[in-house]
Length: 243
Image (cartoon, rainbow, N blue to C red; front, side):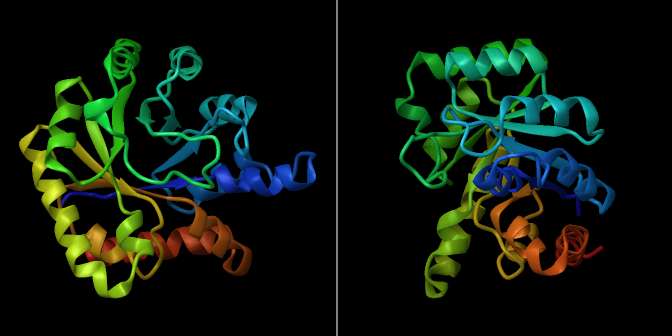
């Protein structure tokens, strides 16, 4: 099976720092530790309200961490201009609501309007590979391909955080999304809400090439240490892939 990358989202290292102010814990140092432990990339989401990661964090991670950055952002003029300036290798466009605690679902590409297509075009012109955080819906996936996205990231939150009894149906829905992405010529990533318990079934989907994990991974690091949690996720992914 193809290699499956683990991208570690360090947003909530910044959440902990911001709760007290100051400089500790540092998301840049967390990124460095995660990569040394085996993470294949680092994910950050620069929100409009800067509730966790700040502009300078993103700039430093981009400059100081050798692993690829996946820059999550809303398709606003401010964020597109920021991404054009720092030019991360990867960018994931996500829906964003000021009042939400975390991203609540996939972006509605069908109703997004011309501004989303323009954002994808500008980022692609800056040599940024663009993905769209999306539900496992064939029409949405085809729309993402039509506006020029190179990849999608399937929203796994409903599967990972919903009732256990619903998981088989949710996995079937996600697998159908993976197939739709392949047919549309898109790379397929996955993420949101994944834990030790739920990552394996997603990792078994051969066409998925990257998994992004943040909140659980950072939270569990309080008990186990960041390197140990990264290594455990890498081991679970490798076992799922038959490595």
